[in-house]
Length: 399
Ligand SMILES: Cc1cc2nc3c(=O)[nH]c(=O)nc-3n(C[C@H](O)[C@H](O)[C@H](O)COP(=O)(O)OP(=O)(O)OC[C@H]3O[C@@H](n4cnc5c(N)ncnc54)[C@H](O)[C@@H]3O)c2cc1C
Image 1 (cartoon, protein in one colour):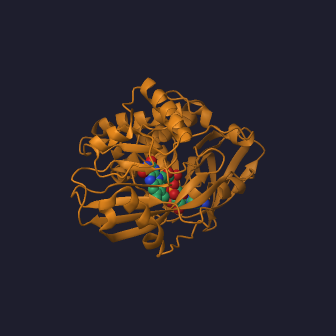
Image 2 (cartoon, rainbow, N blue to C red):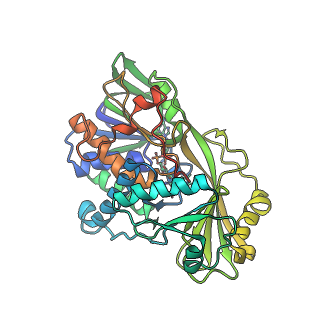
Image 3 (spheres, protein in one colour):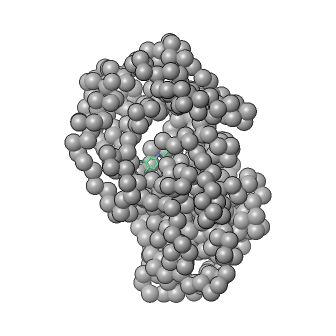
């Protein structure tokens, strides 16, 4: 698809959840009068992280900014019909909560510190002993656990795909142009990006370029003449199971210290979702979604059944491999202008928590474009400079 114009005020590379949020905030929410083009290499989104997501939200982060971003998403969902238009649905969070389990003193201390920060910011996280966990959720096997952190308010599944659809639909109605094409070159003259080149050959002038290209973020940065980013595609496996004798209550998204997580899936009480990295958790090619089909039987199922014995009787219903855009420096987003350039904005590296951060990121990047700085939530701790200076803004609660 060829863009209608030769020049755009803003060109967004990548039309996944993040690029679509930036476009919506600019045109619909803030009423930007300029032209906005989204270039997306696959408008079916078959391989985008946005399509492989588990779509959960939590307050249980270890860094203040990530907690505040989730709190804004809760607010955004509450106001969804007012923001999108009267025919937009009301959104609810399926509040089964998150339960982080600690198996040693170091993990327990990290949970206690995170809980103190979360409580200061108004989140309802509680620290529980194994006996207290068993009283609430008798189905766990907890012999190796020293404590847990639980929050069942504003934590659980949310309808990310509905938000994605409305970002795109309302964005388009507000004048965002989206084309299926690929950015293959970026023209830069010193501090200014001049244009982008499409795979189909056209050169399109750009006032501002936003890099929202997910797992390809580093390759796109290199196209603009910047050093590569420490962001790589990392495979994450998702399994949907049906249980013969399921627990008789919702299972919180349980973050097991052994290195996997599981939760209630859907509302029929029989299905559950399990997420885990593959045995070799290394950088993947952006197009490599291969899966070891014995991994479930040989590795994941035994782990699951040792934590929840009634999961010894389950049937694997469905599974898929997806990619995190994984920031190897500090597992946090990279957002903002490059210090060597006045009109190239990064919004990348979400390391598995980008869906829930999309409203705050879209709003922040739109503010940066419109005002030259953040107006609501200061995203500068997540700026590019920390990457260049190798100064992590560490998030320890990464799933
Ligand atoms: C298994 C799994 C579970 C997850 N669970 C959660 C969760 O529970 N909660 C949560 O908040 N987050 C979760 N995430 C993370 C979340 O899904 C992502 O952070 C989010 O979807 C990222 O959106 P994005 O727009 O940055 O990337 P993407 O959705 O990958 O979109 C980037 C787009 O850029 C396009 N593109 C790339 N290069 C070019 C180019 N040169 N030209 C044109 N287009 C280009 C791609 O085609 C792609 O569509 C999960 C992710 C996975 C994989």
